[in-house]
Picture 1 (cartoon, rainbow, N blue to C red):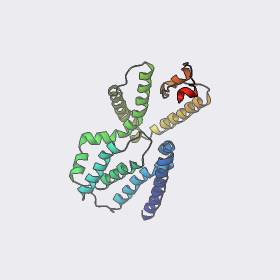
Picture 2: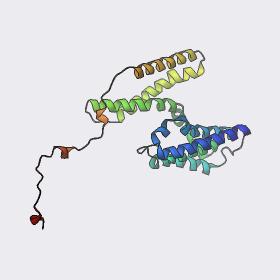
Picture 3: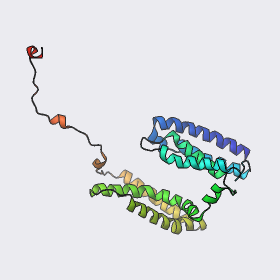
Length: 235
């Protein structure tokens, strides 16, 4: 465990350095590439090693757990994705690590609150919510633009919750509990790769002009005569 802790710590530091530089220079690539985001998973791995090795005082410091939860909640207001991924993402990640480290196995107020059944259920279905929220939001916005109707987030949110519920109970849970689902999962994976390669290979174009920024080119069509004033009038 000690050697694993040192190796993961080195990887986390290296990944975070690349992330920090990339967030300031190449935010789009930094958002999608694994080396720039691996530190987030690495922080969770470090917390797991510390907990399993009893290197942290589990549940003995509600102030640190509360500070971590406060950092996570506060990040909703000061971490924005409008200008790309931000280095400030470190605050909710570290805050989450504090919450896990100082509530796991403890009985402080933070641990009791996060152990409530509705919150636990949201945590269990969070992966399904994560998988479904983005494609549904993108497709719903595209449909609204295509049919020239105002976009409302209420209906997509209901659809996201409903599909995530079905996905969790009828796909995720059965897949975890039964080894028989592995061949079907692999078959779906290869099918998805084949379809993706097919779409990439085919020559087709899609009208994406609805996403283009509106530009003002009115001056190009200005036919008013340009009047040159005599030097005597200018004086």
